[in-house]
Image 1 (cartoon, rainbow, N blue to C red):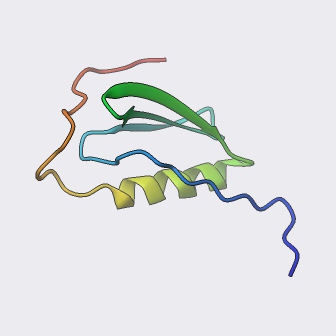
Image 2 (cartoon, helix red, strand yellow; image 1 turned 30 degrees about the vertical axis):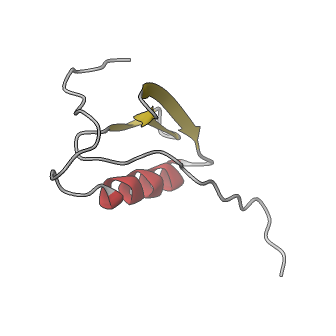
Length: 80
């Protein structure tokens, strides 16, 4: 089996209720997440807007409801 331009990425950060995830410039998904105790900014570029929408929706669907959080919520508004 041969797959052209198929990549798999493991997003190894905790997803939690209140995490900041946004679509940006059609092909980008931006995430503010914790790596350990450090808040990091991740930008993922995708081949087209449909792929970006799919990734955004997959991340949002994977976030559990607001329950026992191991990290504090991001409450400030961030603009770009």
